Length: 103
Image 1 (cartoon, rainbow, N blue to C red):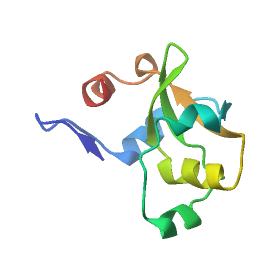
Image 2 (tube, one colour):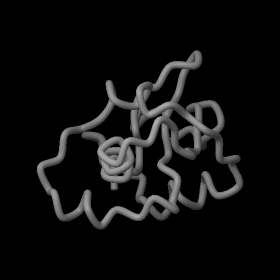
Image 3 (spheres, rainbow, N blue to C red):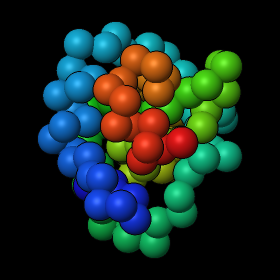
Image 4 (cartoon, rainbow, N blue to C red):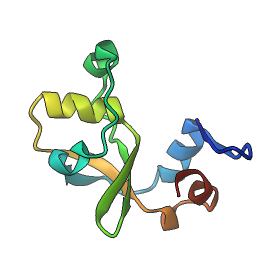
């Protein structure tokens, strides 16, 4: 889950439900590299299932944040993928609570 100081919280289940109908698009792994959160959990990266597209927050065609799927993106990059499928979403497409969390 993600939360802010006032207690506002969004769970992974909420995020998945709110993005369920959003289209999957191709994105260059190069564009995602700058927003990776380096993980040292090698086992999670190794076990990451690339069949599930990461959810990526974009604004003005720029990647702002990998909301869900950081380990999957790391695995794809390590395997040499030049692009992957992802759900590219904007804050405007999501319920207003996400602006509070990710703005």
